[in-house]
Every structure is written in structure tokens, then in C-alpha cells.
Image (cartoon, rainbow, N blue to C red; front, side, top):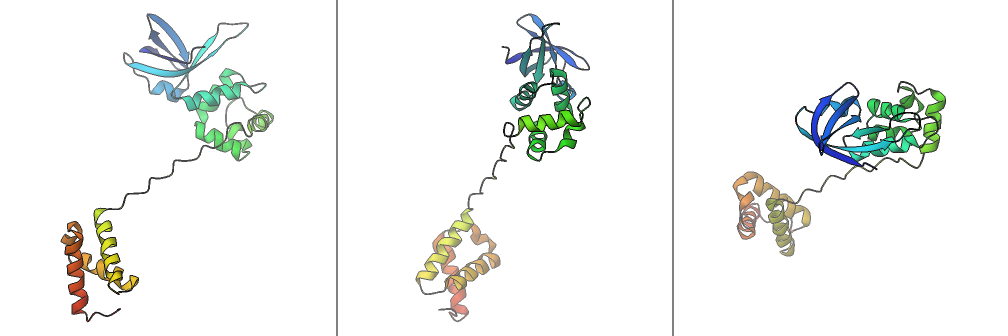
Length: 207
């Protein structure tokens, strides 16, 4: 099985490209989206699926990534869905959209694909349920606390240990950093000293 190819793009047609690999020009059928990313004379790397045929020449299909190829090969396992129809699905929908349509049992999403009627769409949904699931989105990374936040937290802890309530300590530190923004880069003792001075001038309320 040819799972991927890499080489110079020699030709880009309406539904295929020719990529030179080790001196051989391989014809690769692909979606318009994939073909649109290829540039003549430049090197490309495509994920591929080799489909043998009994009554005609075998076909090599190319994909921009493994996700597209997975959708393609899974669709081929459905009765009545051939390589051209599977490729048509990827020409209309992204891999993520295909997975979502299956999860939602969205018949209309598949009938938008030329060549797929309601019965075929329903068969696709039935046979792929549980096979092509929606992939969880990457959770956004929790931003690391800034140095100013770390200093403010330590100053608040120090004030709490001196008898101020957590609320008053937090409010005092926030006010000092707001009134004197240059302290955002200062060390903990400096910020603590300014905060105590501010609390002292306010009469030490909150203790």
C-alpha cells in the first residue's frame, strides 16, 4: 500500500496532479482544495490511498492530511460508496464537518454532496455511527500567572498573616498597584512596604 508520496509537482489538473517520485510521474486524484495548495515545480507531501479496481486501472488518491484520508477510507467501507463519491464528500465537507454530521445524524449534510441521495445519506449515518466520532477540541492552555500576580498574591498572604482580612488585603494590594503601576515589576518587600504605608495612612481599617 502506498500511504504517502513526496516529490516535485509536475502538473495540476482539475481533479488530479502528477507528482514526480524517484523519477516516476505518479497521477494522484484529489479534491479541489488539496489541488489548490499545490504549486508547480515545488515539492509536496501527500497522504495517499491506493484503490485497486478489477475492470480498470488502479487509482491513487491524495490528501492534505491523515484526517482526510481516514474519512475517505472509512467511507469506502460502505456499500454503494466508491472512491469518487467518497472524494466528493471531502470536496463539500471538511473532516470535522463530516464527523459532526454523523454525530448529529444530519442527513441533509450528506445530501448536499452531488451523487448522494437520502437513502445513501441515511446508510452512511447508520454505518458510521460510532466509527467517526467528533474529536475533542484542544483545551486552551491556562495562562501562567504573571510576575505581578505572583507578587500580589504573596503580599496579600503577608497582610493576612498580619491581621488584615483577605478582602481588605486584596483590595489594598490592587489599589497600590493601580495607583503606582511601576510597582508591578517590584519585589515583594517593596510592594508590601507601600501597601502597609497606604493602609497606615488610611487608619489601618479592616484589622
